[in-house]
Length: 153
Image 1 (tube, rainbow, N blue to C red):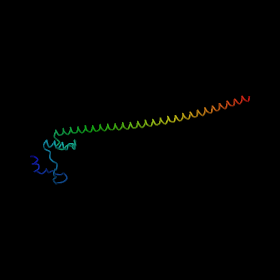
Image 2: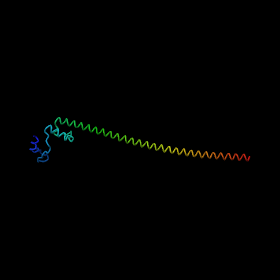
Image 3: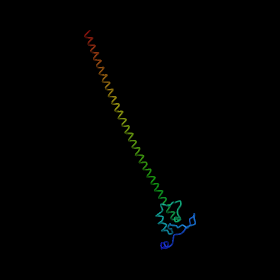
Image 4: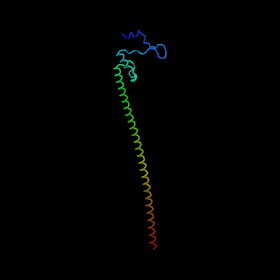
Protein backbone atom coordinates (compact mmCIF):
# COMPACT_ATOMS: atom_id res chain seq x y z
CA UNK A 1 0.00 0.00 0.00
CA UNK A 2 2.79 2.37 0.89
CA UNK A 3 4.44 1.63 -2.47
CA UNK A 4 1.27 2.66 -4.26
CA UNK A 5 1.18 5.89 -2.32
CA UNK A 6 4.85 6.59 -3.16
CA UNK A 7 4.17 5.85 -6.83
CA UNK A 8 1.38 8.44 -6.84
CA UNK A 9 3.54 11.16 -5.27
CA UNK A 10 6.62 12.62 -7.01
CA UNK A 11 9.96 12.21 -5.27
CA UNK A 12 10.79 14.89 -2.67
CA UNK A 13 12.41 18.08 -3.87
CA UNK A 14 15.62 19.41 -2.36
CA UNK A 15 17.35 22.63 -3.23
CA UNK A 16 20.88 22.49 -4.54
CA UNK A 17 23.27 24.70 -2.60
CA UNK A 18 24.84 26.22 -5.71
CA UNK A 19 21.71 27.51 -7.43
CA UNK A 20 18.08 28.31 -6.78
CA UNK A 21 16.55 25.55 -8.91
CA UNK A 22 14.98 22.55 -7.18
CA UNK A 23 16.73 19.22 -7.59
CA UNK A 24 14.78 15.94 -7.57
CA UNK A 25 16.02 13.32 -5.11
CA UNK A 26 16.19 10.16 -7.27
CA UNK A 27 17.24 7.90 -4.40
CA UNK A 28 14.48 5.75 -2.95
CA UNK A 29 13.59 6.63 0.62
CA UNK A 30 14.23 4.07 3.34
CA UNK A 31 11.62 4.28 6.05
CA UNK A 32 10.75 0.82 7.42
CA UNK A 33 13.02 -1.70 9.09
CA UNK A 34 12.39 -4.13 6.24
CA UNK A 35 13.46 -1.52 3.66
CA UNK A 36 16.47 -0.67 5.82
CA UNK A 37 17.56 -4.33 5.97
CA UNK A 38 16.96 -4.88 2.25
CA UNK A 39 19.04 -1.82 1.38
CA UNK A 40 21.74 -2.90 3.84
CA UNK A 41 21.90 -6.40 2.35
CA UNK A 42 21.94 -4.99 -1.18
CA UNK A 43 24.40 -2.09 -0.70
CA UNK A 44 26.20 -2.89 2.57
CA UNK A 45 29.53 -3.72 0.97
CA UNK A 46 29.70 -0.26 -0.61
CA UNK A 47 29.02 1.68 2.58
CA UNK A 48 31.75 3.70 4.26
CA UNK A 49 31.67 2.84 7.99
CA UNK A 50 32.99 6.32 8.80
CA UNK A 51 30.22 8.15 6.91
CA UNK A 52 27.03 6.12 7.07
CA UNK A 53 23.92 7.46 5.33
CA UNK A 54 20.93 8.66 7.32
CA UNK A 55 19.00 5.41 6.90
CA UNK A 56 21.87 3.54 8.63
CA UNK A 57 21.69 5.73 11.77
CA UNK A 58 19.55 3.17 13.56
CA UNK A 59 21.29 1.25 16.43
CA UNK A 60 20.62 -2.17 14.90
CA UNK A 61 22.02 -0.99 11.55
CA UNK A 62 25.18 0.38 13.20
CA UNK A 63 25.58 -2.98 14.94
CA UNK A 64 25.09 -4.80 11.62
CA UNK A 65 27.68 -2.53 10.02
CA UNK A 66 30.08 -3.26 12.88
CA UNK A 67 29.63 -7.00 12.35
CA UNK A 68 30.12 -6.56 8.60
CA UNK A 69 33.33 -4.63 9.31
CA UNK A 70 34.59 -7.42 11.55
CA UNK A 71 33.85 -9.96 8.81
CA UNK A 72 35.77 -7.79 6.37
CA UNK A 73 38.70 -7.54 8.79
CA UNK A 74 38.70 -11.30 9.26
CA UNK A 75 38.60 -11.78 5.50
CA UNK A 76 41.51 -9.33 5.05
CA UNK A 77 43.40 -11.16 7.81
CA UNK A 78 42.71 -14.46 6.06
CA UNK A 79 43.96 -13.08 2.74
CA UNK A 80 47.09 -11.66 4.43
CA UNK A 81 47.68 -15.08 6.02
CA UNK A 82 47.24 -16.81 2.65
CA UNK A 83 49.61 -14.30 1.03
CA UNK A 84 52.24 -14.96 3.71
CA UNK A 85 51.85 -18.71 3.25
CA UNK A 86 52.23 -18.35 -0.52
CA UNK A 87 55.30 -16.14 -0.05
CA UNK A 88 56.81 -18.77 2.26
CA UNK A 89 56.08 -21.50 -0.30
CA UNK A 90 57.74 -19.45 -3.03
CA UNK A 91 60.70 -18.70 -0.76
CA UNK A 92 61.13 -22.39 0.09
CA UNK A 93 60.90 -23.31 -3.60
CA UNK A 94 63.53 -20.72 -4.52
CA UNK A 95 65.77 -21.91 -1.67
CA UNK A 96 65.37 -25.54 -2.75
CA UNK A 97 66.24 -24.66 -6.37
CA UNK A 98 69.28 -22.69 -5.18
CA UNK A 99 70.39 -25.55 -2.92
CA UNK A 100 69.97 -28.04 -5.77
CA UNK A 101 71.95 -25.77 -8.11
CA UNK A 102 74.71 -25.39 -5.50
CA UNK A 103 74.78 -29.15 -4.96
CA UNK A 104 74.97 -29.77 -8.71
CA UNK A 105 77.75 -27.20 -9.07
CA UNK A 106 79.64 -28.75 -6.15
CA UNK A 107 79.19 -32.26 -7.58
CA UNK A 108 80.45 -31.02 -10.94
CA UNK A 109 83.44 -29.35 -9.27
CA UNK A 110 84.24 -32.54 -7.34
CA UNK A 111 83.94 -34.63 -10.52
CA UNK A 112 86.33 -32.29 -12.34
CA UNK A 113 88.73 -32.39 -9.39
CA UNK A 114 88.59 -36.19 -9.32
CA UNK A 115 89.20 -36.27 -13.08
CA UNK A 116 92.15 -33.87 -12.70
CA UNK A 117 93.61 -35.98 -9.88
CA UNK A 118 93.15 -39.15 -11.95
CA UNK A 119 94.95 -37.55 -14.91
CA UNK A 120 97.70 -36.33 -12.61
CA UNK A 121 98.03 -39.80 -11.08
CA UNK A 122 98.15 -41.32 -14.58
CA UNK A 123 100.87 -38.83 -15.60
CA UNK A 124 102.76 -39.55 -12.41
CA UNK A 125 102.41 -43.29 -13.13
CA UNK A 126 103.65 -42.81 -16.69
CA UNK A 127 106.54 -40.69 -15.41
CA UNK A 128 107.41 -43.32 -12.82
CA UNK A 129 107.26 -46.02 -15.52
CA UNK A 130 109.57 -43.97 -17.77
CA UNK A 131 111.94 -43.34 -14.89
CA UNK A 132 111.83 -47.05 -14.01
CA UNK A 133 112.50 -47.94 -17.65
CA UNK A 134 115.39 -45.46 -17.79
CA UNK A 135 116.76 -46.84 -14.51
CA UNK A 136 116.49 -50.38 -15.88
CA UNK A 137 118.23 -49.35 -19.10
CA UNK A 138 120.92 -47.60 -17.06
CA UNK A 139 121.34 -50.76 -14.99
CA UNK A 140 121.56 -52.86 -18.13
CA UNK A 141 124.19 -50.50 -19.53
CA UNK A 142 126.12 -50.61 -16.24
CA UNK A 143 126.00 -54.38 -16.19
CA UNK A 144 127.14 -54.56 -19.83
CA UNK A 145 130.00 -52.23 -19.02
CA UNK A 146 130.91 -54.38 -16.05
CA UNK A 147 130.85 -57.51 -18.22
CA UNK A 148 133.01 -55.79 -20.79
CA UNK A 149 135.49 -54.88 -18.10
CA UNK A 150 135.61 -58.45 -16.87
CA UNK A 151 136.17 -59.77 -20.37
CA UNK A 152 138.92 -57.30 -20.94
CA UNK A 153 140.46 -57.75 -17.73
